[in-house]
Structures are given as structure tokens and as C-alpha cells.
Length: 82
Image 1: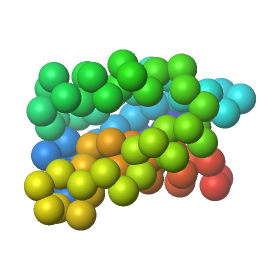
Image 2: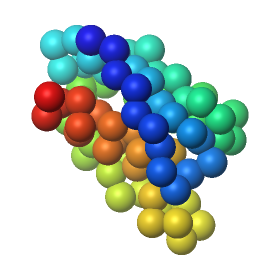
Image 3: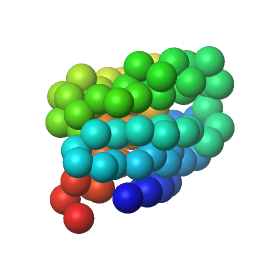
């Protein structure tokens, strides 16, 4: 199943990904710091949804109260609740 999340409070505008059997793949950020978002996507590729949430939730970028990894965690959590 493919999901797209509109990010809030970050330079990246959105993140999309697939979840199949609790595994997250095909993570793509729109906008943001290209190297960082590619790195986050590559590191999270193939991980269990719960592990992404546990590792990325609550990461803060420069006092914004969120970050691209945090937005990914929020998106995965939303997708898992559907």
C-alpha cells in the first residue's frame, strides 16, 4: 500500500512510502536537504514500521519541534493506524 504524508514544520514538503506486511519501502522525500533526506530514506528502507517509529519519533531539527525523520515516523504511525 502506498502512502503520502504532507510534512509540517520541515523543509521537506512531503514523504511517500509503501508498507507491505509491516515493512516500509520506497521512501521518498519531496524537498528538504537532499543528502539528509536521501540518507534517512536509505537507512530506513526495508525496516519494520515499528522500528522506524521507535528510532525517528521525536527527533528535533534546530528547535522546530520536528524534523524530516520525525515526520517520517508520524507518517508511518498514521499509515499503520489505517
